[in-house]
Length: 275
Image (tube, rainbow, N blue to C red):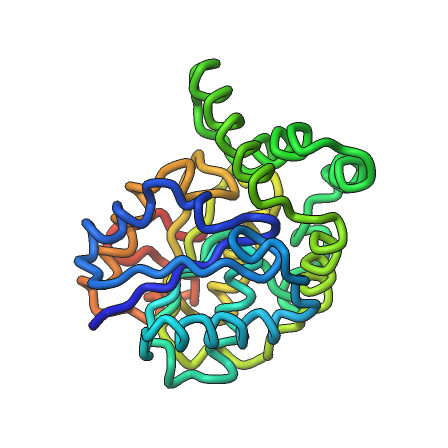
C-alpha cells in the first residue's frame, strides 16, 4: 500500500491542507494519505512543541506506528515540515520511498537572510509579542500566499483560519519552541539517500526561492518552480503541485537532473526549473 505522509510548517495544522489531500489522491492514486500534526499544533495543541527537528521526526514516526501505517512512506512536506522530512530520511532512509519538499531552507546550505527574509523580522516579532489571533493569521496569509482572491474569498479564508486557531490555539511558548527547532537545525552535508523533488514558488515572500535552487544544485535533484505562487504552494496552486508530482512519478522518480556541456542544470520533462 502506498502511504503519503503530509507535513506542514510552523504554527500550521492538518486542516490547513484544505482540499489538497484529495487532489493528491486523484493525481497519484494514493491508497492512504496521512496528515499528522506536530505537538503544539492542531489536535495536539495542548502538548509542548518539540525543541528539535529530530524530536519532531521521531514523533511523526510514533504517530504513524500507532495509526497502523507501515513504511516505506512517500513524504510531502512544506517549510519546517520539510526539515523534518530531511532529518527523517537521514536517520531512517529505509522508511522513506521518496520526498517532495516545498519551499524549504536548510542550514548550512542556505544563509539565514535567505531562510527568512529580513523584511519580515519586525512584523513577525510584533505579532508574536502582542498580536491577536486575527492579526497573526492575517500576517501569515499575506506572507505565505500570492493567489488572487476576491474580497469575499479572502475574508472567508481568514475567518476559517481564525476559527482553526481559536479552536486549537498555538501558544506563544510553542511558537517559540518551533522557531527554536527550525533555527537550530543543521542538515547533514550528504545528499539525501532517497529520491527528492523540490517545488518552490518564485514569489515566496517568506523564504527566498534561492534556497530551493541552491539545494537542487547541491543535491543534483529535480526541481520545479512556480512562476507566481508564494510560500504555501498547495494553497496557491494545489493542482500544479499534484501535476508536478504525477509527472515526476511517471518519469521514474528522476533523482538527478540533466546538465548541459557547461554543467548548467537543464529542465526535465519541460518543467519550470532553476536557471
